[in-house]
Image (cartoon, rainbow, N blue to C red):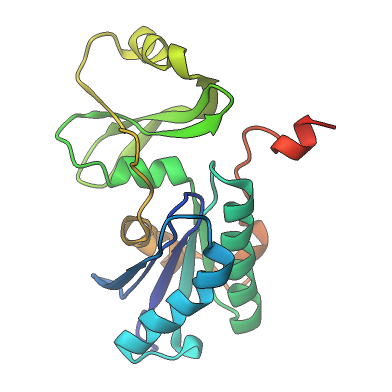
Length: 211
């Protein structure tokens, strides 16, 4: 049996994040400079990580990718990369919401988690999750978009005054967390699973809205 060797790709935020690991731990991670240079650095980052672990690209056994919401261009880069690897190497590929990754990685003891991502034009993408264990989450409000000034009001209507973690500005999804919550999903996915990994677009792109 081949050893488990997983790659996680997070490109939905301004900061490229990559990680590799096996069935038990994260072995190495890579963080690109902020500035939306994902297309220029994603393959360099993957090559660097594989070199650190002395793995070959062909030795990978699965790829996890964040599907959004977030940057349209960034999401497309991550999905195109993961789908290409899945198709060419016949690897299992699974997609995970960027907001779910943020909730799973929240450094807080709060049971209720509300990750948010700037959707521009005075709006935020957000979701509400309930933590049932260290990395076990229940989705209470599915990923959606709300006017930024109404986020707190929306959350209060749902859970009242119970303690809640709302992600601060500058908080982004991390590939190491993506890898950790994707292991079991990758073990169950088949080599053709890349076909069903689709972007999570909650709003139309700016270009489409101007048409």
